[in-house]
Image 1 (cartoon, helix red, strand yellow):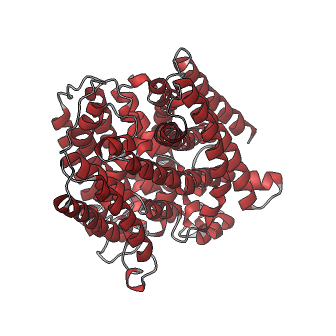
Image 2: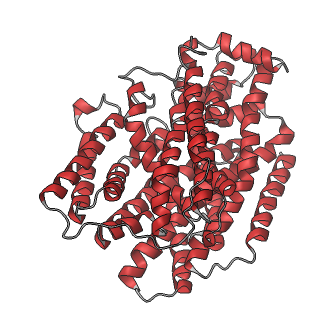
Image 3: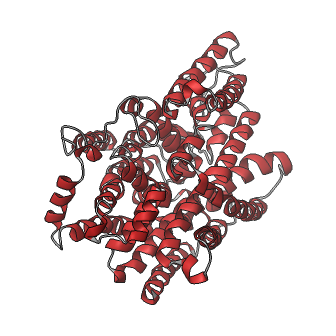
Length: 547
């Protein structure tokens, strides 16, 4: 355990030093310098940062737990993201960068009015504060409590150990985001991204080696032959319930969910808004699409490997205590696998990489929250004449408060009935659909007025809330509900625009923030990403391993 702790601290410190060295001369006193990394990010940095911002312990733990208890259906959260990233690159980014945006609500102010912008900013902040940030902290604390046995060493309960760990993670993450700005976040993301991909693939590789008695192919054959074929299937029945993913939602609710997340979610697209030009932004987004297609092979498959090792206690892969814990909650599948398959000398390195993934998601959302508050709420409402230096100072104070509140809320996530990842996605449903509808309608129409966006937002929150209490909808997957509500939101906005159009048609202005020359190979690369997405689904279907 001492060696694990030393290697963990050493690698974590190395990443921090490199991030500091790369950003030591950056001017963080200006708005663009602190919030958008001075609009200097390149394609590889954007791709790595997108991957790490998205990939964290809530996915590693949540999706592994889902596949452990169901099948390979959770690959939908990973693989179908490629299509959304292609849409981001080809449709949204040219317009975002043309307008020189810093935040998505900034576009909504430009297209509708300042009230719409503030409403959406508040929705984003509440979503980050009450769901995303606490979920990241809780999932990270869960795995670190397992690896370092915090509860046992301190003589406290498992929940108390998780809370103590969440506090430590929250403090370190807040320091990165609050005092380093977006550039420090992006640089550390890139370094940890390489480590996470290497470390992430180590888990299934060592797991299969253990199953095959140091023979990888023998372990793979064991997994495929012993685990029931239906566990390899990613195509679930249309009536399947959460945490399973019904196949029709891949073309309906999942599309809506992914487009919100990858095309309008502030914590994600802030990396692309910091690109040095459109070419680099598109390269980064599409390359991230290729990376997302790798997810099933180092995330979701881990659930099946853990399931195989827990099938027969007599085989001795897991202790009786671990198997008993897995029976209580599938969210422990990933940390259990780590402890039992990873060689001890590598445990510290992988713990450091996981720590980087946790920090990436936590401090990225925290940085985006600070950006939303200072630029979209504080300056226009409380201090319109604020200087850049004052905004940065206010942002640091707000980020500190937000981090403290998130740490306090994190333990509540443990009560999620269908697992932490499904809990997170379901909570996003309260605000993702009306924001996406407002952005899409705003981009592709000229006459829809501001009141349409406000009506759409209020209507959606009310209807989605009601859907949680209607008995007839309790057996309907929430992604179906979101798909129907998205169509309804768009229809209502278009109808209002037809009945009561804007006084003057909207015209999108080019502010000349960056070079808008598109990437030469964007279409070829986009087709490649989509083909890879289809191939992965074919592999995990009745025509592939599930057959």
